[in-house]
Length: 80
Image 1 (cartoon, rainbow, N blue to C red):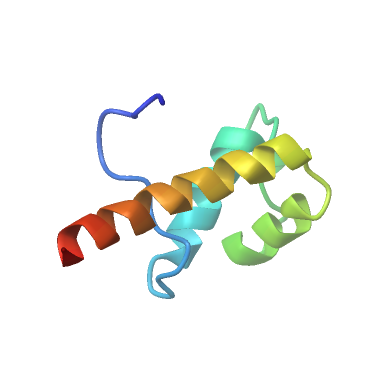
Image 2: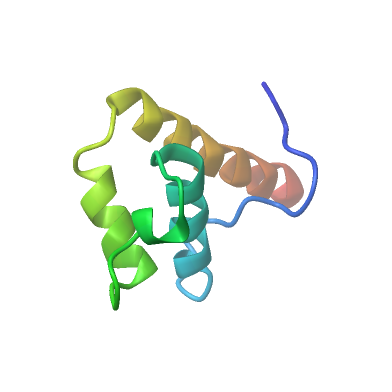
């Protein structure tokens, strides 16, 4: 399993950082050439992400789910 180096990937189950999670998932999975390709003017990151997620490849959704599972596994490890 590849583990990115640098800051941790944001969790999707934390309301205060959910916009950061959405922005990163768009950057990683949505084809883009400029920042304007990621969301429309005035659109929030969560709205842009939900719109993208509804039409993206199922394989991408599984990868996003696996990223969240890594957080949950670390939580379980820390609880025991």
